[in-house]
Image (cartoon, rainbow, N blue to C red; front, side, top):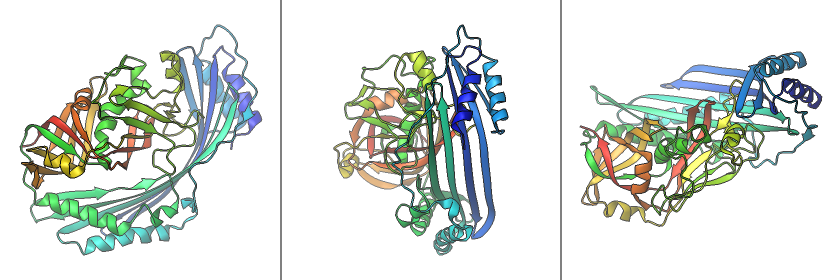
Length: 459
């Protein structure tokens, strides 16, 4: 843990060369991971991460130094190294630290670090037992992870606080084969919850059946034709397109330095009238939620786009200075080895008013992307390319048959304006998001949406 008197001394040391803000972030984390292949446990790993970082600002300049020596001498040395990179014009005395209690909105019933590995493996075996009886499934890959992260944050503005984040997740992948080719299906639910997640959110048997269904469906699907056509993207992980193609463009990490297509567009129309997009860290026990961000700021519910109008960016402390705008509780980092920056939390397109069946029935000929896969995006331009994990060809408003090998190609800002239908059933899905502050848990989400015209890659 971080003692208050130690934190006060470290912050004072960090400001000695004229920095105008200093912060210390200390982390103690226990990670547990289990992997299973075709019913055999391949690995059981437990890892403890422990260390701290000191950050100093001078105007728009930020310096970050980290260490795994969290003794007082180790932390003071870390602060000296950070301060040595700053050449300030005046000395800023830090405020006295005042303890701040963090209201906890994520209640944990059974901390996973107190659960024996045998119980975790038993849950994995439940999924494997289902895969063993699924036709055409030749291999199953199952993984389990949990993490308990405790953080202490103090800064020269007088903040001194702590928080605990608990995560649990399980993934099931199934491989279907006809003897000459293979297809994979997968599902990976999780949450900011303890082992009690298996009482409600995670059903290993249902996960295995869904992964097997996806794999088997794609195994017998013909290749998707290429062209420009209407595209319906289903709820849940379909939200990865907004996350990647638009969400990153709304992070101050890109906006503050002019590397976003959304720069200077606050108050302007950037999406269709039916689109409202939100980044919300306050949803209890969700994968991307927090009590406080990694700068100690209470988490928020932030409306990014409202009825097509850009309302807010996601902003951390350093970029708030550069943009002359308030922070939004969006400062996040993978751990103590990374300086925080603005990042998404639970980012989704809000529910609309359209009926799912009508959305498809009125689209004519096109593609129904039931599940999205991986992809890439360039935040500066918003151009993206995403694989469709499970897709269906639509003929005259009716789902005709599954197709594989489809990809969605476009530019985020253009796609937002072409959304003409938004369904009523918003769902979220879990993922890990990478950026300059490391890999962090984030939720993506949306109801079913329709894009009136989109480039579909195929054959």
